Amino acid sequence: MGLWNFAKTAGKSLFGGKAEAAEAPKEEALQTELKALGLDASGIDLAVDGDKVVVKGAAVDAETKEKIILAVGNVDGVAAVETDTDADTGDAVFHTVEKGDTLWAVSQKALGDGSKYMTIFEANKPMLSDPDKIYPGQVLRIPGGKS
Image (cartoon, rainbow, N blue to C red):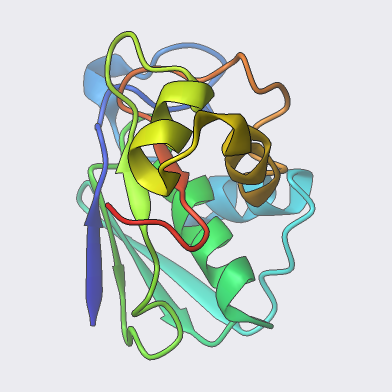
């Protein structure tokens, strides 16, 4: 089982504005978000338990499952994402964006080379639409990186 923590009040709002007291979204809203991002969630079931989302099942591949974890975790009202198994995400490396971070700085820290920031950007598509648009509390996927 894997468990990843997220900033409960720093994510994308699925309610059209900041949710009152950062309430967790419903499973249907999360599934709609995954579809809107173009992520193939076939084989995946989502369950909301308080402010935690439980991801069950096997995705088409490890990269897709990691992106699903990030897509639902970076939603306003979600504080954690738990998976029923970490067999396909055991090597996942995530980074929580801090105030003042840029993708260049994250790349320098995680990959040892700031000029590889586009690697992180590409690894986080479609959740990221622009390499200059990251925010504190957001969790990013680091391909081949160190936490």
